[in-house]
Length: 373
Image (cartoon, rainbow, N blue to C red):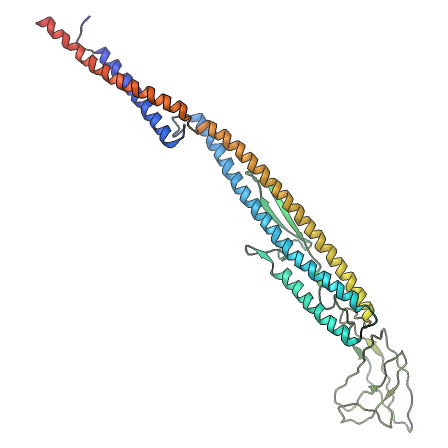
């Protein structure tokens, strides 16, 4: 049947040409971008899955950076503690040296100078060590026993690692805690002295609590006044010889031919943490404090080392998971060039053929004119 009202061949050729051109454009887009899914219409389900995978991959990638930052933080803390450990080892060495009886008071004072310098530096390191503005050994606002820093090492909120920095007892790392030279002992008179004029020199027994001789001197000082305390003339055992001049205006105390009788109770001040004037005892205390500090430092370094190993394992695991997930996403959204080039060639041929057939379909109705001829 020959009709001119409806050209079915032309319509079908036009439809085929449209489909071929759409396939051609899709193949060209995929080959241009390298992606099989360039919009939701390409593969709605695949796009949703690949988008979810992308969020997981990006989260893992950031978690790897977080873990590496945590490793750097732990390394910073460990480096500071290594210096503290070296200085504590030197302090212990000096404590053992000062404990020997072959050293004089001046020798121990010289040793104490180095100990004090090392002590100040230890506390300075603990106070100033920080990473990205975070003070590592400052427990302000934290538990008094430790400081905890949480590192996000996964794509989800529950994947975390805590870096715990246990507190160091800095009170033992002070001039009092690390003292190898002994301490100056302060004696305080609790009663006002009573004076009595006597015709001859006299002896008076006074008591002194807890005075340990460290081959140092004991000085009793006084201020000017109407009643001047007597001068201590000897430092040996618990019995002391007291003499003095009852002059009311002399600032310096000196021995005289006249004696005064002082009724005073003398006690040792404990304001300096029960200071012990014995150099041997001080050195022993120092060694104990240093050993305890070294134990704490070594324990903290071991904890930091274990944390570094854990973070390194987390990085390795995240990297492996991220690689596998990226591979899975690639299969969904990346274009297969061998397939797409084949599809491109097919689409080009179909587009050209459909165009030619459309032209032929349009010309086919020209034959009707011959019937009118």
